[in-house]
Length: 576
Image 1 (cartoon, rainbow, N blue to C red):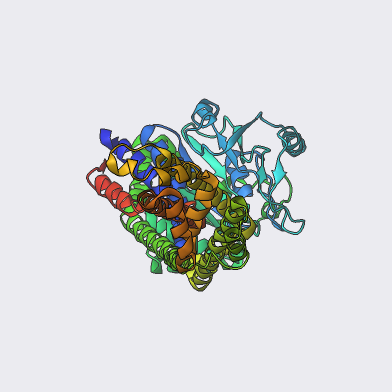
Image 2 (cartoon, rainbow, N blue to C red; image 1 turned 30 degrees about the vertical axis):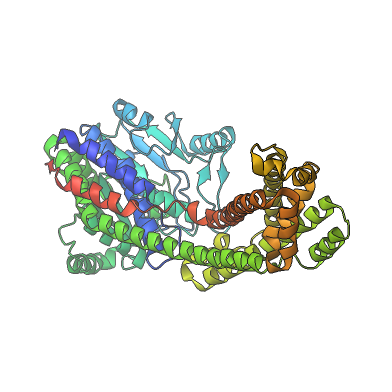
């Protein structure tokens, strides 16, 4: 298999684009897109990239199948000794087992294939008891836990304390150099982690060895795997196991007919009769004659360079060819995700635009100068303290903003609850009103400090002496302004800005205190300052409402990046 120099770079870039794509929203087709993304990453990381980087590496044959199909017994028999726990009543393969020739162990010691698995090396064992003892000791030493463990199901796949699944490695001199066998967990296991492991391991295979039985060869699960193999054009072998002698010819013919109708008539088929060893009798190994044909086929594909390269190239080319349909599907799903996030974001934007309009309208109408604030304004006209009036206005403005934000959040949450794309509980959860009120209070207090500084500037400007004849004629007014109190000016300015038509007398009092020109400039600057802080308060809450959407990682460039990566790949070719 001759690889063009740029192909690895192009595939690496494509892999990064696939990894960056996200499909978190529960849209139609999103679950399939997530599965496709996961399968693509597994195939690229575990098989395509490693195989292209090292075409001379041993051929990896992954033995997979349904629960109790006899996968482990088959692997043990091909190796010539027991390397994997076998059983027919329930799934016993929890830790994947890879067996290779001692000369090939360096190919699997590192992270060339299956990089997400931690390696556990096993010395050659003399008997089943030693294998059981080693398994128990290994699990204790590595502190494995079993995800989804269930007494009836036989337990889930072990996971180390660091969250990494183990891959048990064994070496066997009797196995031909250039061939590695991997016993995978059951593809139909009741334990979800077992099924996931089986799928990951199959994605790393040069050759898929699908094992089924005379009783289950027509089941949906193995046929799903067969159709997937056909879709990817992988090198596939099927083993019909535990076939009673009396009906062997009939069952084999029916199975062959099913394969032919599915377009898999050229797939090599091997039949293993039902034997006492199939049920774990004796040593648990099938007679050498029962697996001789399959062993010869595997040895030929492993030891003949031309045949081995052809098998690996076919699987690699099949995976790459499947990208032509899978990548556009991912791009389409990515576009749907982005469109949905824009729609959800627009619902928040609309809710907060209405909130901003409400705040502006109520400020213009003087709604802040009502209730407690209005009472303090009346007291102020009778000689009340300006700081108390400022406190009341600050509280009133905070309350106005809080009510507007709560209404906007309720509108947005209701719109999201009606939208199927926002069915995720993280998106529809109710906002924390107490935290929102606290943040709004901070913004309003900052506005008050800026307003007080602005009032101090106005007082200093009013106190500044002016030259000229007109100024000399107005010295009496200047002396009155020199006694102006900055806090009084701030209270009058705040009342003017927040009281609307209700605070007309506040504007007149401010002009009397500082002069008409200074008062006009203060109102203009104060109005702009108020608009800035009101917008800042609403923008901050809107951004927090949008944070769950932004955290999903759906970006507008994902669709284009996926299509661009596929376009670059189409310019590269693998020469078999």
